[in-house]
Length: 160
Image (tube, rainbow, N blue to C red; front, side, top):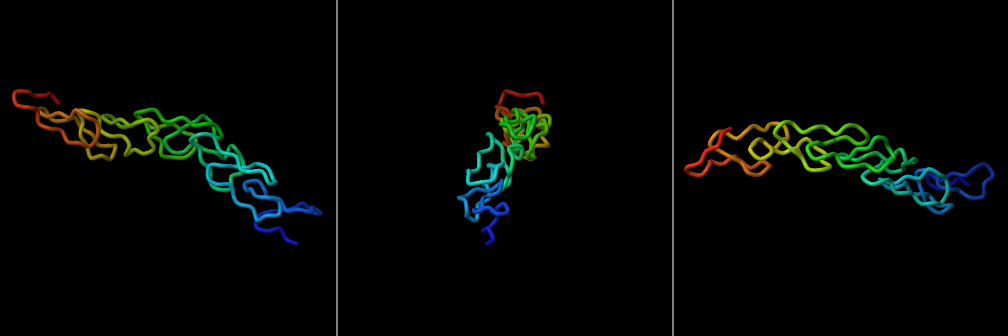
């Protein structure tokens, strides 16, 4: 008889087993390993969790298939990833450099998008992570983010 689902059997074997990338009891149809898990052997064993801050597509068959999620980086696939430093971002899965935020912007630890780079205090912009300019003379902005520059109190001024 044919094995159910993706399970397989060797010629002459008495039982169907789950192939790598899937798990379930012998003789079952097998379920693909969930996202961020993998299994590299055949049989009923369960799928193993990937290292911290990594992900895989469902059905992964190897530890090296666990790649860094956006905002995180490592020197190689299959190891625990660390957050991109503040002031940088990384939008792609896998290894690769964290990108520096543009001048006049900053981001928090483990930022995944250019839009996560927001204008620093004293700079104003559109919130896209790209265009920040210094506040005009006579105005200031004390906090980072997309808030506007405000006019200095009476009797005070600022240089741009």
